[in-house]
Amino acid sequence: GAVVSQHPSWVICKSGTSVKIECRSLDFQATTMFWYRQFPKQSLMLMATSNEGSKATYEQGVEKDKFLINHASLTLSTLTVTSAHPEDSSFYICSARGGTGPATEAFFGQGTRLTVV
Amino acid sequence: LAKTTQPISMDSYEGQEVNITCSHNNIATNDYITWYQQFPSQGPRFIIQGYKTKVTNEVASLFIPADRKSSTLSLPRVSLSDTAVYYCLVSPEAGGYNKLIFGAGTRLAVHP
Image (cartoon, rainbow over all chains, first blue to last red; front, side, top):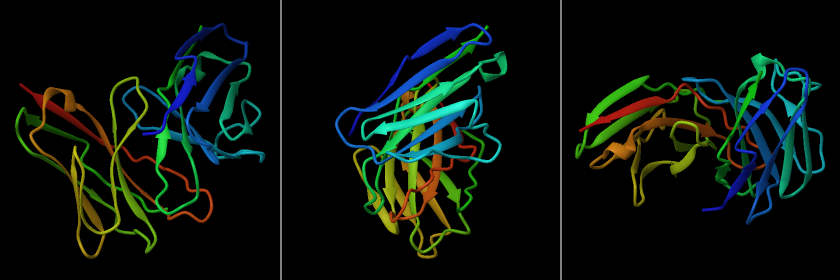
């Protein structure tokens, strides 16, 4: 199947700093990318959806000024956690879909473990 | 978006067949049913997708009754490496961007 790569796989940062997570579709063009966060023993929670060249659409309760999403090209989306705090520590996962055809499969990155100290 | 309901957890033993049923009573005409597998600290991995009747691939089968209000993922002869969380998702057919909303999933534990 297609490959979606996230970078970094894990990151530790100090409280108050910003962290950028990259999500790349390596062998297909991703018209839509999704960002999720997952806490231990819980399901994935959709944070936002981004389409290339458009502003991201955030889910209710997700602060768009805190979680900046940029889908600058058809192969790259970035999530920046601004002014991170310990409660932002979580597992962040991106997903990408390569088209709008019927039942287009979504491919997921390996996730990024963010720890804010 | 259709909401899905699955058992929170299941236990099985190596070599057994495991069937995980998902309810999606509000599924729409154009919705597809997709199952994902997730191991700890990894992103979900696609298992199988279907619209109606039965779909089979090299790892699983998906049974969907005529009313499509439920679906059953069947894993033949599970092994220890099948211990994971399994998610059933229902999403609209393409035509715009489609959200993938995850439910609670089913935590499958395979024992020796």
